[in-house]
Picture (cartoon, rainbow, N blue to C red):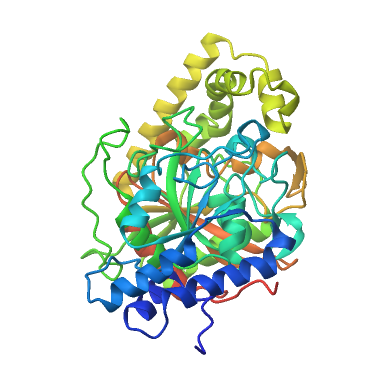
Amino acid sequence: MTTDLNRCDATELAELIRTGRASSVEVVQAHLDRIKATNPKINAVVTLADGALDAARAADEELASGAEVGPLHGVPFTVKDSFDTAGVLTQRGSPIFAGRVPDTDATAVARLKRAGGILLAKTNLPEFAYWIESDNLLTGRTNNPWDLDRSSGGSSGGESAAIAAGMSPLGLASDLSISLRGPASDTGVVALKPTHGRIPMTGTWPREPRRDWHAGPMARTVRDLALAYSLLAGPDGADGFSIVPYDFDTGLGASPDRPVRVGWLVDSGLGPIDPETAATVQAAADALRGAGMRVDAVTIPALERDNPFDLFARQHVMEMKPAMQEATAGHEDQRFTYSKTMISTPDTPVQDYVRAEQGVERLRDGFAEYFQRYDALLLPVTSIPAHAHALTQFTVDGQTVDAFRLMTPTVPFNLTGLPALSIRFGTSSEGMPIGVQVAANWHAESTILYIASLLESLSPVRDQHPAI
């Protein structure tokens, strides 16, 4: 093989295997070799799945027999260590769950396997998947492959780093407030947070608060996101939030009969945004306008009236704190940074909790009104590019803000359940990836995938990879 298998996307790898130009064994071995070579520096992979090579041999034999195969036949994938994987360690980023081996796969894992995918490894996360940096007492800290002194984000930072470094072509991760899109932006890959409930969360932990957790794919190309989403979406009869029948078409080439309408913003209720990040969003807006879309600078009054991050903070103390207390009871000495912080945070007064609930309702109404006029919204993913490890405050455009504020541009779409996608479109003066976020109306994943595929083709940084 002259093709660099570690830089092929999952769609191409599936085609190489299906046409006999590469074997599944070669593909899996190439990724295992890459993990061996680079993971000691990055610490993205925390557990290798036993039997991946055996599964690859079986996949090659099945193909040789002439059997009908799935769209991911023989292609390896990785999974964030908050998803249950049958017979493979699932330790949730905490020594409290050290050695835990589930009997069954999470629904999303099972669906990727059913499509022919081969589970390769589990990837790192913060303690219990709650934080903006992937670090914990059990498996340690993940480094950004673009700069080892910087974070790869959280809570899916292990997954994003593994894909960016060529250890995996495709990943499965989850998102409470930033956890798919932020890490993707930090490492220069792509990630999709679908409409809430589109992909069942069965077999994924934690679930509190259930209404805001989302599962979604992470990859190096938009077509891989579309393929994975088409395989993952749809009810499973177990997740009560996953109830809308699946009807998605992966065709990324089709556009509406009229120009697509895109609004863009960098300052409407988002707080301070790094100037290079803001410039990248504007560059993406200009590129879409040049491609024939109707693109306008917009404001969203609902974002300015009710700060989404403040709503999130007031709600979630009341919902996450009891869950953390229960999970760590009797193991107080094994609590890490975020669980200690959450458990020590005073309860939200009930009247403030109710006001936050009402604020979220107003936010939903505001977006519903916006999407009557526009097909999509273009905005930053995070307020700054990937930051140094273990920071608790950031200086953003001359203002000092708490680290939690990094998620201000992403959390509105968790509170409302709207679909949103992260894709790289720029580079900072320090050489770090800068992503842009594309959001759309409920169940309009095809819209943001279409726009993202266009941005991908227009990107000034397409096909750039970390040197590690």
